[in-house]
Image 1 (tube, rainbow, N blue to C red):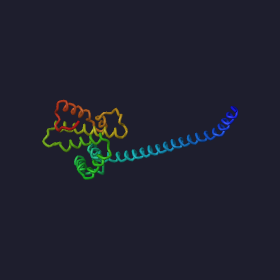
Image 2: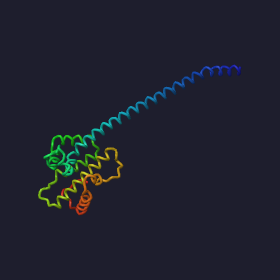
Image 3: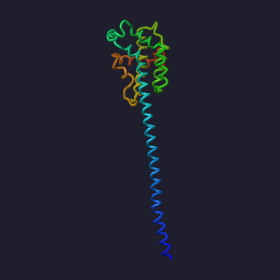
Image 4: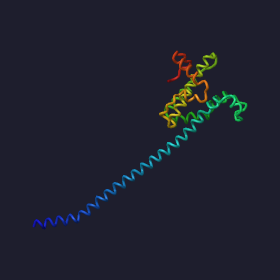
Amino acid sequence: MGKNWLDYITAIGSIFTPILVLLLTGIGWHIKAKIERNRTEEYKVQARIRELEDMLRVDRIEIYNQLLEPFFVLFTSDAIFASDPEFKGNNKEQLSIGKMLTVEYRKVGFKLSLVADDAVVRAYNNLMQFFYKGESEGLSGQELLIKTSQWIKLLSDLLLEIRKSMGNEHTSLNNWEMIEWFMSDAESLREMWVNCTTNRGVISPVRS
């Protein structure tokens, strides 16, 4: 009798073992397929994110170029400015300031506030607030130099934040190094800014 039960169990095992193997194989395949589908979807999402980031990067580059255009003109040497047919007969200071007062330039600033990093927007705000509040009439030559060092410092802050926003967030450059390549007197302006800040000789207060 005991042998018969053993035969029955063996027979049942021989029947259900393949079924169990097939069942477990099916479950394993289903889990694997689901994992692969999720992985594929994740790849698609990541690819879409990278695509959007690239589009945003292109938009930012265009906005930054338009935003900085008046400063490019302003810091162009007199000789190069005079030799450029595009600017023939124009005054670069008037051209730069005039550009910043146009409706189109205001639109660029509005776009900047929507797509730029927080630090870039704050740096640009500080620079523009300095211009809005600043008065240059009636200032002595030394006071004008101090005022110039202040807004150059703010411009260098903006350039550094733009650099960081373009994928160089760990840059070792400081703000003054961002302007040394196009300003021969960058070091003297930096020293003047440090001195006037240390001595509290700032003419127009700006946010740090």
